[in-house]
Length: 462
Image: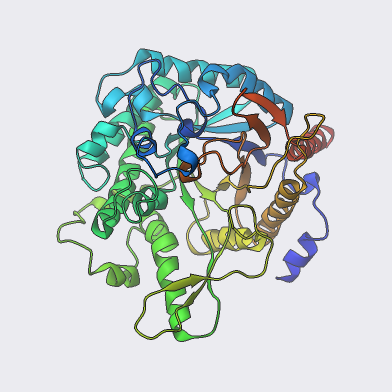
């Protein structure tokens, strides 16, 4: 830890953040909306995935989730209670364009139109993510992200959304975590659509980035005042020992997880060492002339999702390709992720130092714990509060080291459907009883609310 970081860890004071620093919370459409068959919405790949036995822990689905579709005003009231200045939400592609086609669903679009208006009336700035993984199922049936044609379908969808909402929404995120969409969805198969094909995963990653670039142009054409960015899930990757094979493993994982996305977006090229690593699965003709120019369209900001660090060592057995994701003997959340706030400051300073000077926003950062409802109905979650404190300190550390960090969105506003984990893990600042849909502000939410309130008070009295 640097001397600046050591000084930063002495205290966490709201007034140490600049007056225009943005504090918010985030969600995603499939994780909270429910109403999967209402209002003209058609199935997404996650509806299909959830309906496949054995895919989701506990057999859970997002069919109801947090019933946000019917409870938006109640949830906006919770946002006001938190005092957040911005809310990051995602649009459900199959709710706006059923089947992924060209026909706009007026009922689905009206849902988001009302949501945006209600947020603005409450003094909360909407940040819209166009794609948080709920691909219309017919587009997957036609080949999904490994096919090139889907990039134009996405650009058309982006233009439709920005044309309808861009007069009031100024902050747009094209994609959330394209690494997950490509490599968990088409490589390991643990996320929708559940395919296991390394070549498809690589093609999907390129087409996701190409779709991002086309969407940047589409959004700006439809809403010239828009600010547009992308959200990447970035992790520091460090070798757990000094063996050359562990250092090379860290290089390869950092290359595929971080540089494979950062380099084309900000440098207009794929990293040469990763191209060499992927040569066995790269097919001829996957990269077209002009693709990288589209992908590297200038951005207004970068969203960073951060949860933990990858600390890796290679297998000690000769001739094997096993990787060991070793711990660093740090506290672990209930889903097994180590709590490593220093990794957040490392990620932010690396991006600002090596890639771009544009504003950075933490668009997701949170943790899962064993949240229990007390006899009095309260939910005390001191571990999540400590997580917030430590990671906001890491934000100050990163700013002190030169990172152009402009905002922080906590994950998540609500406990919700956590993808393959179903409802088994809870990340929310607000507890949700899934049987009754009762919402209860956790102690971490009250702490975050107080912190934001002190920051706002400091602005008003400065």
